[in-house]
Length: 535
Image (cartoon, rainbow, N blue to C red; front, side, top):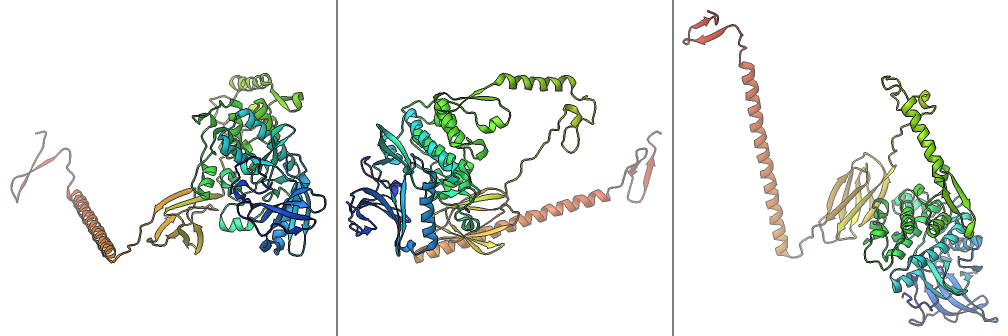
């Protein structure tokens, strides 16, 4: 059950949509002793474990305990991943990330202790407020940026940034103090192999995370880095400012398809908002949602600066030759662009091309290989064609949903259930796919995975009564007869057209050439008199 009140304690790493309280449904684990702690309440349950409110038996100190479920505690891989979550949080050690104090592995149990938080998630706040004022939104997101900067600096990518993983507590008079939760999907960017990498490569499906806020590269199982978190945080900020996520869809594959292929509506174009969104905030949000990671802010702190100071300069632009100077005022970085020097340089180069450039009458200043002559300006200009992506996406949607999609050729294997977003290598091979659903006729399609493709198919229902069966058979027979008649008519028309063409060709060969200086006039069947036209 979702927790609505901001006074209710929610476990730090369990999303709010997975929370249920034991006061509504008493749990058998209440009263259980784990080490030196007695379980007082069950405050959350997720896919991997339970979260308890517990109290030290002697000291009376309250903590939150996350315990791995029994069926997973017997699996070494699950215990290792469970431990990696705790280790990740301890390595980062940041005030805006929930603190984990101990990790215990016993004979049939694995659990760790966390600080006990009182407050609510950003998701709870959005359910109450719908949208937040830009100043308040920036205050919250800037704290998330600080937490992410620390995580990225330690080599971790969170991979599940969403409102239910941003916890707000009242600390030092600030009711919007952030604690970033749930590092269960976090992974190392260099030393740790990507989670589910083999499974994703074989199935074509996306990796762990929340599709509503997932970056395109994470969705397709490609290499991810810190910029994936920046995309997700941009999607969260979009929702905080407008009251809706960047994309609305009916299924996870449809969300992923839109993240990869559709440009979201600008936040300034959303109508009916109670607050005016500053232009620099709108630009920052749209920069985060770029499909190309290279076009996003290059760090979480850069995003924070863009939101707080209206600045859109990134380190990548600095490397490209834009002169900047950093001022240390206000405890942050402030970039100032020196546009005069850049403009002067551009003017000199353009003027040199116009005045002293290559002779337009010469043909050798252009080279057939696409390179400009090196002696013209002292450097070469290389024209490169955009490389084609190695993978393509095939989206198949059916009515009804949950239809089975199977590949028949060039190999036989199941692809999944609809709506299906399938990633595969680009190829010119011809695919034959059959789609089946209970109570419906199967549907066969053929496609070539040489580019992104989308199919929306309506499956025909099977008849359910004898009368419907007879009607369906009669209709099929009528359609078959109509199809045969249509084909016969087309063949007949083609034959007539061929005969006309043959007669025309034969008539053209039989006609003799007429000489220009002689006319022949037929007098009768047996004699021809030749007349000279100049007589």
